[in-house]
Length: 279
Ligand code: SF4
Image (cartoon, rainbow, N blue to C red; front, side, top):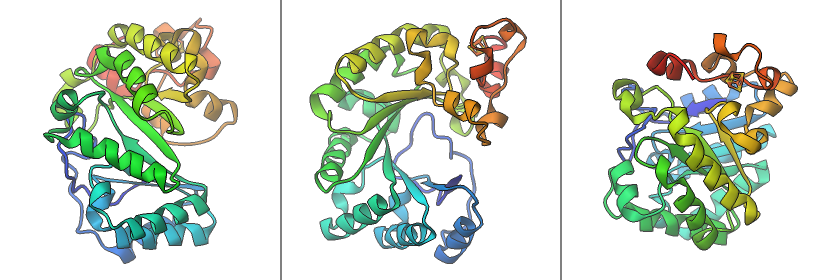
């Protein structure tokens, strides 16, 4: 289950899903209590930016999750990684590894100018990429999340080439469509139509596939994924009848009847259909 630790952030992303959320001030004891009541085997700590609560708190939380015998996913934009004491980072990485978990790093651009446009942070790209390299060097497992939005969808192939050239050591990439919540609920134009994105996504997939980089995709239906439809993360969840928020967020629509993917597809996001009314 997803546990937003804070809505504080060191960025101002155009697609921020935490935007407008009002949190109580971070309190370690309350957060530990919240995690204790989660029945899932995967605990996902998200933000805002988790590093803003301090690395000591993150180490404590990681240890707690490890003692529960659960896996921890720590979401971050990696901007603050280079500011951390390497000794503490190593401790955090080793505990995360002990849980079988990983860092989930939001990297939604292939160069500095696009990164600035999307994250609102000038010169953040270099720091972020350095942070990713440091984490890998000290043994972290890394998922990169590319949040597809109006500004970056045409550059998905460039991003795939960037991954191959600069960070081929990452464990996998997840392409995740912008959700119609937070800032995107206010500014719907940040969510592009599936039909416009599909061709760039397929080009990006092909490049990664050819170079043996692992990837998957979420929040865009199977009918826009061509031969790579099997990369959608929900297929496995549906086949194994795994419950989760994805069943509430997505729903098949009238035009889905008769589709060959019907049984293995969770459908478009409901907030996407609210904007576009159709696939
Ligand atoms: S079930 Fe609907 S959303 Fe899913 S692949 Fe088929 S037409 Fe697309």
